[in-house]
Image (cartoon, rainbow, N blue to C red; front, side):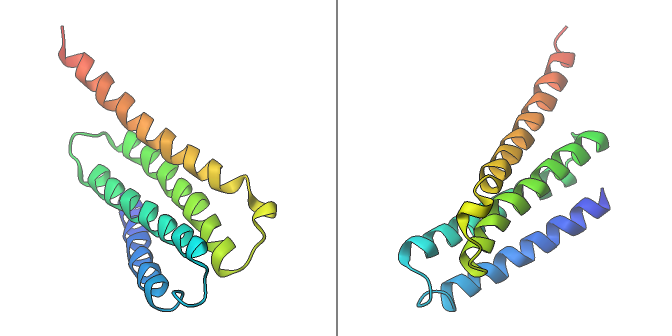
Length: 128
């Protein structure tokens, strides 16, 4: 669990760094559409970092579920946001990695659904 929180904290710091970099250094280097795409990657990264911090500090969620959710969402961030960063910053052709961005989005969705499943399962145990 502490390993997850360390990784999540680093992802949070990189979101702030990349957001500032995008706002200042990339403003004149990227097209408005490319900058918008980059900002989407930063925004999704930060939203999911906050989600993971809440998951990992929650006493309501078991450690095995924290780990499942964390790894799904961490991989989702890396694939979703990372592929957009690669396209915009490293000029990797989108045609080469077109499948990575939606795969990352799917992992993020699965992370949310696993969380919903956990809470619904936990809630049903309380109803008897």
